[in-house]
Image 1 (cartoon, helix red, strand yellow):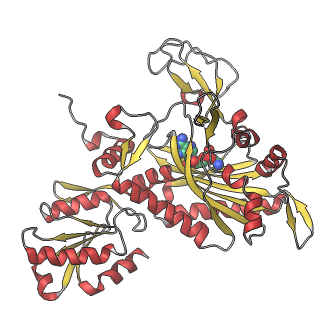
Image 2 (spheres, rainbow, N blue to C red):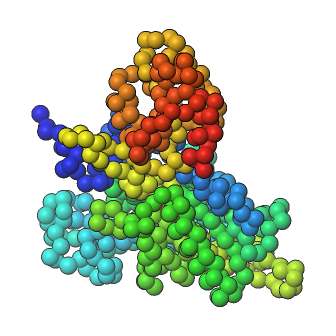
Length: 454
Ligand code: GAP
């Protein structure tokens, strides 16, 4: 029998992986068939967490602004898009292969930064220990698919490697169909696909994942576009902080010239600290006029912008903010994760997620499940709150156990209906973070929760 690892022996990735599976946040993709590397399925709580992250992104980046509109482009695009964007040629990672066991690694994973030379002989394969490597070669990350009903005429297309291009190919459409004028942005949320050489670290490096992006068009003036670049850096860092991410776990990391993606002139990552390492969570890129210029060239369409005030015609510059929904979900979970001593010899695991991100805003419990008067009153409280929020119901086990389960789910409030509730029309509300309890009149409950959530 294998000995189960105690939580105290696990690193944060393992702890989150275990909690995510146990509570229904994240499951390995296609698990009953042995899985599919780099794919993940979100369970009931994970789906809510992701939905809340995307809603908050949309609320602050689109709904709350006059200068940003939203879009939802197709995943499958004409393959010429990817030629124009440079992805078929340059969207690659350097790959090395162990000649003995044929395991493949990204060159940087085994500590090789000179992607043109040979792999130094002193580097051993972590799988079999051999020292015999192929030289690094560029491995394209685009995922291919075959489209069409007739076998012979099937067309090879790519699943989008970034959600970005769906916005840029519609630059003219957005200008012609809305009232936006430069400077303005187009935001989008959606799936992207990459044939990652070594997916891993839970959802951090997946082959299918979601991005939340803004493409912000500015005048092609270096000073002005850099001003917007700095502006969006600050906004995006502020967004993570406003949703409760701890200051000490966030930092910017500038890309050196030789680290820049093929489209970028300048780039900063917003990084999150976990397990004594810094991990990329979002990229802020100055894309110059790369995308509109290339699409204008390849499609032979006029994608220039005419400024009515100055009577100038130009190709705009683009400042991009590109965050990962899955990565931020992972890091929001890590940041919220605590193991706390409750009393002598007893600890609790709690996710102190920002209430806006918490999958369930409250849980309703009848004190006893075999007393119809309690259950009926609890049901009516539950249904009333459910009109407005995601609310959990639990009538099993003792109250202490129910609290622990909701702590692990990150539910900010637990509402218990007891015998006093029937007489006084009030309930006990227990706060997830302080574990303090107060009596609240049932008619006041929606206002109470609304205030706490704002
Ligand atoms: N449009 C620009 C772009 O796609 P990127 O730095 O390649 O830039 C942006 O990706 C973000 O997408 C990353 O910061 C990360 O959050 C997320 N991301 C990228 N590759 C990912 C992967 N394999 N798995 C999960 N998230 C990923």
